[in-house]
Length: 114
Image 1 (cartoon, one colour):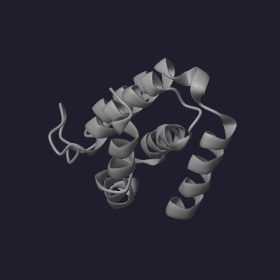
Image 2 (image 1 turned 60 degrees about the horizontal axis):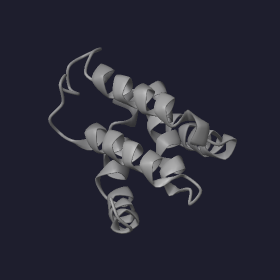
Image 3 (image 1 turned 60 degrees about the vertical axis):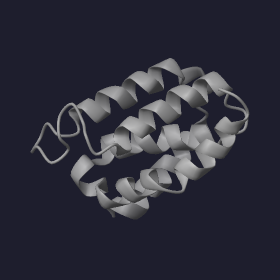
Image 4 (image 1 turned 180 degrees about the vertical axis):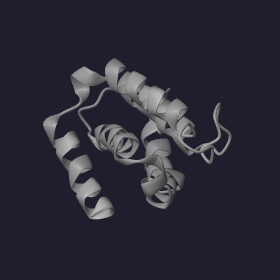
């Protein structure tokens, strides 16, 4: 990836990710949404290295893709593959997750789930 990755991430973050996360927040559940938002805020952080942003973009792209290993509309199991991908990405980039990323994610959760 070259420096165009920042252009891609800006376009990406303003489109399908936020739409899906708002539309399916209740269905996906707090746990899935919190992890996705934490990765999202890490992606926006200029201190996050390119390799970590690549992992995050790939994972969040999987989250918003309409074709999943397990369809998101499947009751109880639909977001389990998304959750697995999010947990894996968080583990890989954990050293670059800052407290403020988690705090911002939790603030969004309060707004969306209260």
